[in-house]
Image 1: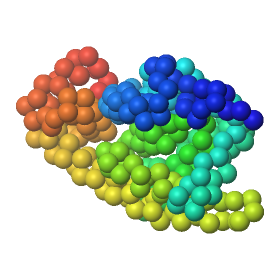
Image 2: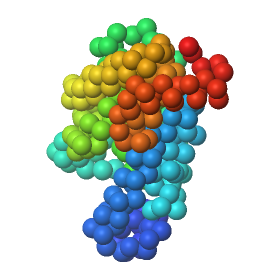
Image 3: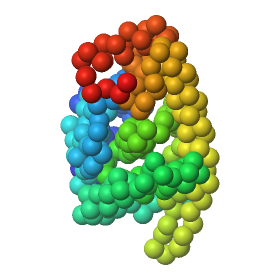
Length: 265
């Protein structure tokens, strides 16, 4: 079957920029996508994590490049993986994408994150991320979308994570997702999730440090470090790309008290 996402007679994805050179397309995509990912990582307004939100995130990331951004793929795909000696992961069938993704997302949302130990959180979060990635809902951009979605999801549970580690180690991250998803109908279970556990664990350890530093500054500002205050300060730091001092935090939280009377005190 001809891939409808490619320009006829090529293996170049149709794009809004009309670029017909694969290298130039990847460079342009990287420029646009890096800006959109940075914007999304600083967005603390996402509260619902369902299939529709996943599609919206893909749209926000790739809207400048692909007309089909935010829309599930309409064909089955295979990708030869170096980490598997050229074998492809068995991604969700095109007719099962939404069902498979929704099943993972339901379990993610129902899991008792606040009661889990650190080790349980690392293992289960890694497992959910790999299972969601294995559905591969989109023709392109699955890893970036799903890693970003999952990072925002876990932070909405009050568990912070340094997602810059994923960006700085993008190749390792993708290979780790491949290794954690290697279940085949003919070859059986070939998964090696320990690579994904390692980078997720490191990112969560860094997240604990980020949270601890925010707690220290909030208390120095004379406020109790409740979940709402910690979240506001961490995302404020991200939005302005700097660490705010106690005096600035005091002014921020005083303003939030006026604007949001229900804020913890």
